[in-house]
Each structure stands twice: as structure tokens, then as C-alpha cells.
Length: 504
Image (cartoon, rainbow, N blue to C red; front, side, top):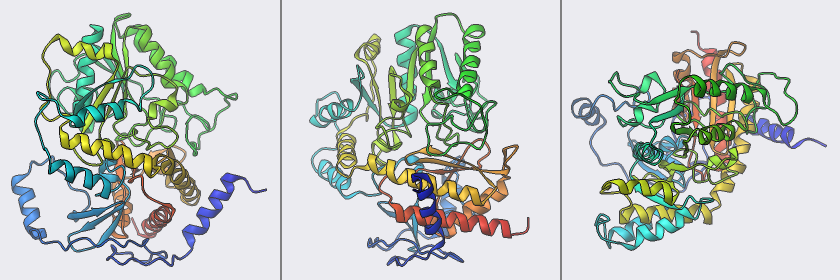
């Protein structure tokens, strides 16, 4: 009997090579040389009536700050969206495989979320929380019910940076300690406070005091790190690195933990740690997964030294990883503070910090306020997002379609040497492009950009991440289906073929 894994790969193999009978009723992006067609969509966006492309470029150059970088050689002007689809100003349709940087969770302009926002806007926009309004209380009950244990106190803010900023403040106030640990390759925000947590040279300004009390420890990366093997990750797809680990034991994880212990022995005041921050799967860093069991042991070490463990669920929360609602649940530990943003509001500016009542009480040492946090509109949107995730079983869809996606990408990896690694869980997926599989050297930026741009020209929008920008980040709206996966993998395969055929 054919194994499930082999059957999945064989099915993907057939899908990649066959022609689709689906036809798009909206104008698709250019699809030169592509055998299959973009999946159908009955949605018809309104015709674009805004400023000209040239006027937008001029305004961007003269009136927006230069940090606002645009993707692609000819930046897209996106004026409409519907579920997994985006539309540019000329009517071309794109399959969104990046979800507005892992933000669109239930689908662009989801009708139920739109309706909830519209109804709330017609009733009450804003009061701040100096007055009580019903929606924030309803939402607080709904959101905290999604958490285990004593994680029942929530503070609403507006962005992931704000959430992690507040978590840092809470941890230091509650413990009375200063030092905070985070991983190299981590991304936790760009406020002056959280920039110290973020450990990418490309995202850091040369400012004094940014790293005040923050230590970056070795990143436990089973693919690019010092240690790694063939069964380290909680993923349907493993690295191509070999190992001799016995069953139920990851030697790479043990080695990375031993290295973490050295930091506690030599670089920290004994028993005086404030917190450790950890993404369940690193996002901006390129969908890096930690060895199984590592974070649980790390959390125990932090707790033994008086600190709190902060789970950054800004990208991995709300069912995206498939088998759990929160990414930390798959790691088998209980965080003290959880931060979330992005998918929480499906694109609406909304974020939150959830913690225990005891830790939350630390904010009572002084006045603390957020003008917009948990406003009526944000709360209404947040409730409707939870409703849609449950009603449309999007967590289950993330698991099933995401696993199928990973298996298809693994089959593509077997065909092309420049795909060094495929990794992830659910619809939190990364594809690392390399110039040499043995050394795992990153594929040069011009070659990565060629593939990325070609995918865009053929109608699929991927993100990029990792220190070298050589990881394709695949984090689509959780409503995508297998036909979308088929098209996306087909496009990526054709883009790689075109790149290999082009003289460098």
C-alpha cells in the first residue's frame, strides 16, 4: 500500500504538471509559459478611479518617508482585495501568498468582518476607555477564553511593536529585574524599546541605549545553525541534514540548550532575569523552527532564574500553525505573557497582551493608558474574526491545506537543487533558496529577486525574509484551498525553470 506521504507527493507531482480547466473571469496577471491557469474567482472589484500611477510614485518620493520601501522593480498599486485575491489599478488579479505580511487571517474584506465593522461604525466609533462600552468587555471574554491556565487578563493595544513593548514593561515591573533575553534572528518590533529585542542588523539603527539590558542568545536553527538533523522540527518536512539521534531525542536541541545555559552562567546575574521572548516560529527571520523540546527547557531555565517567558504570537497565533490555536502550545510550555497582533484583526489595527492577573497588576504602580486600544471598532472586528475562524474551520483548513502545501513544496525541492530547505507548519511556511546545498550558502540576491519577480508577473505574491532575503515567506489568508496551492507551486516551479534557463 502506498504511504500517505508518498501518495501526497505523487498527487502534488501530478497537479504541478497538469493543465487546469479553471478560467478566471477577472483579468489575471501575466502568465507567460505557465501551463495551468489561475483559479477562478467570481468577485468583481470596482474600477480603479484614483490618482495615476505616475502621480502615486511622485507623491511617494516627495511626501512619504524613505523607509517606506515598495516591493518589486515596478511596485504594484493594489486598490482592492477579496478573500485570497488582490487587484491592482489596471484590473490584474493576484493570488496573495503573504497575507499583508501575515496579517490577513480570514480573507481580504471578509463579508462578515466588513459587516461587523460597518454596524459598529454606524453606532459608535470611539470613546476611549474612560467610559465603559460593551464591545471591549465582550471581546475580552471571548479572547481570554482561548487561553489555558491563568492567562485571563488582557490589555488591548494597536500593533505588535506596542504589544511587545508593553510585555517588556510588565516583565521588568513584575520581576524587579532588568535583563531580557531574545534570540539572534528574532524580530519583535521596531519601536525604540523593542528594537533592542530585534536581532537583525538590517532592522537596527545606530542609537545609544537600544540594547540596554537585552542579550541575544544563539539561535537554535536546525537548518542553518551549528547543530541540526533530520528529525529536529515539528514539521511535515525536515532538513536534509543527517543525524544519529535515538528515538524521541534531538541532540541538536540538547546542544543549543547547553549553549543557552552558558549565557546564564556567565552573562547574567544569577536568579535575576526579567524575561525571555520567543516567537513560536520566527517570522521575519525566515520561518525558522526550533528543535522539538527546546523552548520548554528554556522556559524552565528562565523561570528558575526569576524570569517570565513571553510568547510572541504576532504571526503564529489564531490557528495559523494548524494543530493548535497558539503556536506555543505545540512547544509544550506555559508562557507568562502572550503578545499578539496582525491576524487578530485581519488587517485592522489591533493587538493585545494577555497575561495573568498577578502580572497585570504590576501596571497599577503608575497610570497607564492607551487611547485607541480596544476601541469599539477594533473590538467588533476582533470578535468577528474569532467567529469566522470558528465557523469556517480555518484552523483545520490551515492544517490540512498547509500540510498539502508543504508536501508539494518538498516534491519541488527534489526537482531543484536551489531549494535548500522547506519548512513550517500549517500556513506558516518558508522556502529557503541556496546556491549550494552542501554548504547551505544563500542564493545571491539577484537570482532570488528574479524568481520572486517572475512569480509576481505570473500572478502569485510571495513574501521574502531571512537575514539575506533568500527565504520565500508563504503566509496566505487561511481561506486558501488546494487549487490555490496547485497554482502557487506551479508558478514557483516555472519561475525557477525560467531563472535556471537565463544566463547569469
